[in-house]
Image 1 (cartoon, one colour):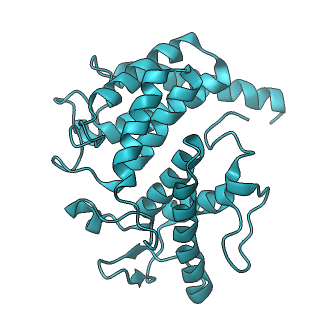
Image 2: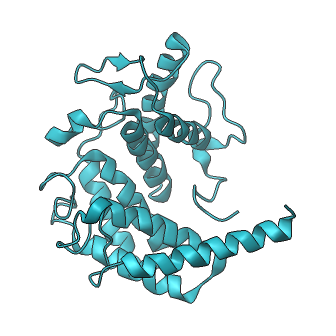
Length: 256
C-alpha cells in the first residue's frame, strides 16, 4: 500500500471512529464501560480518560474543530468528578475507591490541557497528581503504594505498566523529577525480573512474588513503551532513540 493510500485509510478510520464516539458519549460528557457499566452514572472515569487520549491524538493529527468540543466535554466531565483531595472515587469500577492505575486518567488531563492550552484543565491535572504523589513508593514494584483494597487484585502486568507509564508521562508533563526517578526504579525491578527469568511475570501477588507461569502480552507491550520512553535503566537494557526522560519525544499517542 502506498503512503498516500495508507494516509487515506487512516483518515477514513479516524472519521469512522469519531462518528462512533458521538454515539457513545453521554450528555454529561462521559463514556460508559463494557456492557453499559456506568451508563446510569453518566459515564466511567477510566473509560472516559481512555477516550480522551484518543480524541487528543485525533486533534493532533487532524486539527478537527469537532474534536476540540469533544475534548472539552470529556475533560470537564473528568475534572468535575475529582474529590476535594484530587482523587477519583466517583464513577469508578471499584465502588468509591481510587485505584492507582487511574494515574493514566491524570495523564489524559495533562494531554488535553496542553493541546487546548487550558489553565483550568491543567489545574485539575495537578490536583489529581497531588493525590497520587501521596502514594509514591520509592522502592515499590510499580512506584506506588497500594491505596485501595482492589489494588492487590490489580497487579497483573497490564495494570502495573499503566501505573509506571502514568508516572513517566505525568512526570514529563509536570516536569517532576521525583516521579521520573520513582518510575525508573520500578523499571529496574522489571529489568531485573527479565534478566533473571528471561521473561516478565504475568502478575505479582500480595507478597510481591512474580508469577512467571504465564505471560500478559498486553502488559509486555506496555512495559516496552515504558522502557522506550525512559531510556536505559539497567545492565543490557537500552532503548532505541534514547533521550533523558524521553523529553525529545512528543508523547505516546501523538501523531508523528
